[in-house]
Amino acid sequence: MKRIFFYIAGFCCMFNAHAQMHQYNTNFTLSEKNFVDTVAIEYENDQIYVPVIIQGKKYRFNLDTGSSQGLLYTDTQIPNLQELGNVISHDANGVTDTIKVVQLPNLMLGHQNINGYVASIVKKPIGKVNYDGIIGFDIFNKGIGAKIDPKNKIMILSDRKHYFDHEAGQTLKYNLKWFVPYIMVSPFMRHTDEVLFDTGAKQLYQMNRESFMEHRYKSKQVNAQVEGEATGNFTVATNSTEKQDKVYFLNLNRLKWNEFAFKNVRTITTQGASRIGSQLFNYGSIVINPKKKRITFQPYNNSDSVNVSNKQFGVAFIEKENQPYIGLIWHKSEAYKNGMRQGDIVLKIDNEPINSYQEFIDYPFTTGKKYKFVLQDPRGFKKEVFVTH
Image 1 (cartoon, one colour):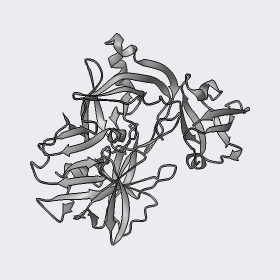
Image 2: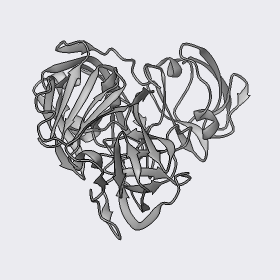
Image 3: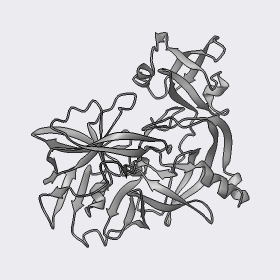
């Protein structure tokens, strides 16, 4: 969901694979060389999806630059997977787990037949998942460049060395950490922040709390952009929900990508890495040039700035004992003013019982509609709260 008062905790995944029985590699092969190919894509709910053909059947894969390699879920319907062993994975909250690694059957992406593509098997996130797997940044680490253009619903792929060298736009160099791309942006004047370029995350920008604390001690103009603070948790990663900690609500005058400014950006701090997410595609296309380790932003408005003016997060709902639980709430939000509090559990919405976190995730909210929540507070008392979505 975007630009609303609710925030249902997002599923974030960032893998760096410290090998046990399988090591990160880009040994998969492509059927063509010296190619240029155009692939149809979808941009839906702030995510990029590409069609993949496996053994004659069409699957939908999410393009996630924050994942070092492919991902499938434990209930995957993709047949004939070859087990390769296990890796120790690190999720967006830094929590580790041992997960299975498999090799997919040959898959078709555009006109390319990809042989030997590797994916990790992880537990399925709570809620509806409208895709079959994830393609990670390994496709670019292989040396394949891309222009991702959601406005025209295409992605251009090429392995030619200089094919993307002369693309116009705002260009940043990236460095690989754990096989995924990190760039430098400027959230405050005379300050830079190292961020993960993560198309698997929806939010335009989130800032690591420790990074924010370093900035605020150096400059009064940083403190002037703090709207408020609260203690709680809101991010659900692959292996964990982040621990309770202080969260800062920020209203950035501008967020600069090279010389381009995203103005009036509201965001919050997070325990995970700072990141630029796929809401970037609401404002422009992206060119990834792995030959020169560059990412270029091409604004749709052909200007040097855009006014974002998004709403601040109000409430974060997380899962606790299979119930929707308010993990974080901002004291200036409508929900707080009407009586919602951290620790409340959702029992009903508009008199419809909510028996699990899954049912809450799947509830058909409509933006702009007012809903009646029946909540149970930590003491066991029930209350009714009306909130506009």
